[in-house]
Image 1 (tube, one colour):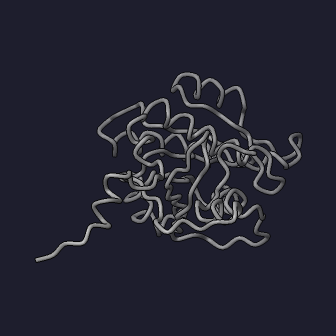
Image 2: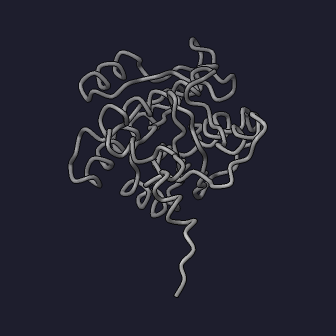
Length: 223
C-alpha cells in the first residue's frame, strides 16, 4: 500500500465494515500549492495524483482547490491542494496562495526554458512571501519527461541540478501523462514538510477526539 495516496478516512472505515459515528478532525490542514507558469502541466499533475487520470485537453486554470486526506506512514493527514493560476492575468490569485502555502511543488516543463526561469523567480517570491525563510519546503518538478528527449528537451539538466543543489531543493522528473513519479513528487513534498515543519505536519493528522472529550460531549446537563 502506498503510504501517501489520497484516501478518505470514512472510506477506510467502510472497507472494514463499520462507519465511525464521530468523524476525525485535525488541528489544521496542510496547504500544498502547485505552482508554475501556464501550460507546464500543473493541473494535469494534480488530477493524475488525485484521480489517477490524465486530462486530454488543456483548460487554463484560474485556481482550483482540492480538500483531501493523504495516508502517510500510519496516519491520515488533512490536506488542501491548491492548483494555482499560471496565466499572467490571474497572478493575483496565485500570489495570495504563495503567502498561505505550507509547501510547494514548483513545476517547469522540460521543453520550455521560459518555464524554468519562471520557477526560479517563483522560488524567490515564495521565500519573500514567507519572511525570507529559505527553509520553506519546495520540491522542483521537471514535467513532460514523456516527450522525446532528443527533440523536445530544451532545458539543460546540468543547470537544473546545479541550481537545486545550491538551493537545497529536491528535484524529480515527472510525466503527468504516463504517471511517472507523480505520486513520488507529493510523497517527497510530505517528506520535506515532516523534516522542515514537523509541528505543522503533526497538527494535520486526523484523529478522533480523546475519551475525555467524548465523555464531556455525552454528559447530560440539567439546569
